[in-house]
Length: 184
Image (cartoon, rainbow, N blue to C red; front, side, top):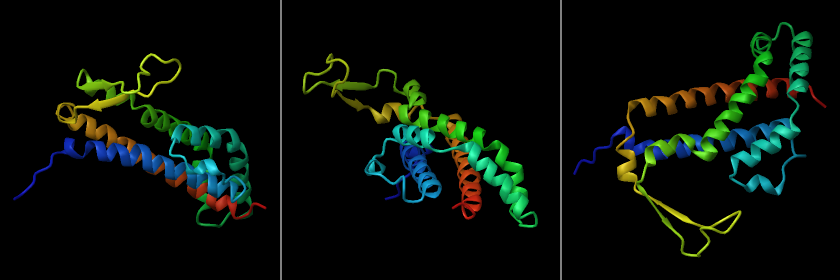
């Protein structure tokens, strides 16, 4: 028997891989590269990308990385990577801001709400629906109905985010790695 899949069938898995896994791995990689072992804490076991990014943002110094990039280019003017560093180090704050946007987008799944409409059920097994400020409501989504609304436009949006994430990943990690080798 041949099973046929459409793009909407794999949409949730792609969102999970991009939104959860890829962004989390990138943040943890940046933390490790920039801070070596001094910033590896027990909270690195979390999968909360919003919290991980907030901690990274508080500790990382983009201005310092940019200055190290300038110094690298001065000290290594003939290095084949100096051109890339010169062209991209000024964009580091922009890359970091775009990463923050992706973290927010995939942490809260705001874009997914437009597909859900009324195709969900709330289960309040622990009677905490109106317990302020937190509750433990279970949300049961009707994936067949929801995914039937996914079309090529939505897939292209995810592909655009993947390309942006690849560019951010390459640029930030590459510059930190190259300039980091001279840090001590």
